Image (cartoon, rainbow, N blue to C red; front, side, top):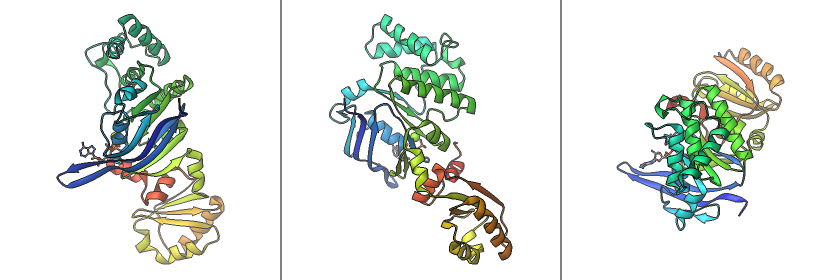
Length: 327
Ligand SMILES: Nc1ncnc2c1ncn2[C@@H]1O[C@H](COP(=O)(O)OP(=O)(O)OP(=O)(O)O)[C@@H](O)[C@H]1O
Ligand SMILES: [Mg+2]
């Protein structure tokens, strides 16, 4: 098989609504290699789920091509389905049965005999540490337990690639870390993972390769460490209202400083990308003092994926997530 499990070329999907067309996926190109944990990072409405639904044959694109494990999603959807597992944003466990029964039923839906389905279910129960609760009715599960069962359901047919739509949204930090460990285990077993997330730390820590999506487009793609290196230097973030209006003279002084690479402003922050953060911060504080400009807070950090996003789109993923309210 090709070493590329996912190949997407100029993929487009527009939805026609009363308010006009929504360009949910607007010319996406992407390749995901075998054995990767690939992460699709982006704010609400970016087009992540729509892309995933096209790749899993649940939605037909308007134009462009997508191939999964060498099979075209439009021409050979049945072949594609044989090679994939899909865990949707809402999950798929059938509540009135036990975890084990849900797994066996899923296997039967894939055409397995009951003994084969049972054997595969037992294997996944071991692999994903479900044994403590696999014999309980699913509606008694915690959110984390349910999510782990959802992942197991997606793996019943031994897929080449597993698609996970926001696998950890709504989980507490311990359950998130637990699921990350399970996902890493799956990769070790040879499964390619394609997940979507809003979480910067998830993309950064868990994923080998990421694409950042915004408004139907991929705005950055690569290995997280490489993407962060593109944002050279350190970042000094200063909390203050309307910096562009309140401190034009200070901004022009900062722009002339030796250490300054780039200044980014929004309504509530001034972000300074600088060569040596520790040295620069004392000079920044001195200039604020000299100009009598008040600040609410100041932080120094190494560049994050949020800085990559900010650089490409002009807005912060953190702020969008905070406004969207579901992170
Ligand atoms: N069936 C549909 N009809 C009309 N518009 C749709 C439909 N499905 C999605 N959209 C719109 O397409 C855009 C992309 O939605 P999508 O669900 O792909 O985003 P997402 O990145 O998964 O967001 P989230 O992080 O909130 O899950 C949004 O503006 C959404 O409202
Ligand atoms: Mg979504």
